[in-house]
Every structure is written in C-alpha cells, then in structure tokens.
Length: 233
Image 1: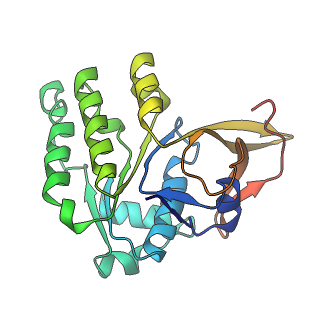
Image 2: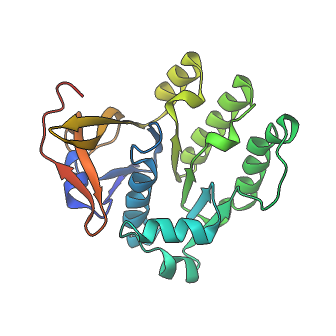
C-alpha cells in the first residue's frame, strides 16, 4: 500500500499532488547546480518528520554535507545525533581512484545496503554519479533492479544523478522502472536564473500532480516556488 508523506514543504506537496508517495523509487536527474541535493534534502526533512529512519549515502564527508545543508536551512544534526539518519560517505580521504576500483563501488554499496536493510525505512543516494563511473550498463541495471526489490520490501529509495551519467538506453530503463522521475534544469527569468522541475513520472500521487514548476533555493526560507510559466522550460 502506498502512503503519501509530506516533504515538509506545503508548496512542494501541493505541486506533487499531496506529497511524496511511499514506498516508491524516486529518481532526481539534473546537471550541476540544478537543486538535486536541495530537493532530496527537502524530502528527507519530511521523511524524518514522519519518524522514518534514513540511510543516506553521500559524496562528501558527513561534516561537509551537514554544513552544506545547514547553509540552505536544512539542519539534520539532531536527527543524525539521535541515529535517525545514518550518513555513509563515499569520500575516502587520500584514496587513489583507479578505473578498476571505481568499478567495484556500486557492488560494495549494494552489499552494505543489504547489511543495513533492517535498520532503515528510506535509502537516499546523493549522488549516484561517483558510483557509476566506469561501471558497465549491465551492473547499473542490476542495481536498479535491486532498488526496485528494496521498494517492494516497503522502503523508499531516492537517487540523485547527473543526466549525463547514463546512456540513452539506460535512462529509458530508469524512467520505466521508477515510480517518480523528476528532471531538473535551469531557466532565465528576466535577469535571474531559476531552477526548474519537470515531473516526468509520478505514480501513486493522492491528487493530480502538476507537470512542473520553477523554484529557487533561498538561504533563509529553503526551497521556494517561483510563479513563472514552464511552457518554454
């Protein structure tokens, strides 16, 4: 059974048709600077407020991530200290990355997730980009199937990625497998650049979701919807 969980932001909940469907496989795709981490963090705000335990796999150190999120109003320190969120950094200080060992990251992450499967309700990977570097398409699709299996066990999986991380065929498979697929971008409104979100797919929404919206990440108020037309976005 699919529930609707608030993202912790009423404007986004309204755009999503009530909130975030859970359990679900959520994919947030966009290039650098389009708000992927901010959006996944906003979802984590709502999920932790709903008393969900989160396993969050991140690119940087825990300290760097917490500081970055705090700078845009998302303070996860209390949830982290209370063990409601377990952060797992892919970053390893002074590690020397080669094509051979980077190929193993995805399988190692999968094994770790399996080990921790009883201790979380939500898996967030922000971002999957360093994990698929030098990884073949078969391994990527196998990991996608694993994520679907995880959702089938009642857990929500949220993954952020760059649009260029995957081949055209892999992207098509990802869109087909996900319950929610959000494509982020940028557009210029007057003399200001804003971020855009297109809901390519949104299964399980309570009400009819909007097809997309523009937003900005405010240092005081967090994510704010910007009232502009998405017709040319």
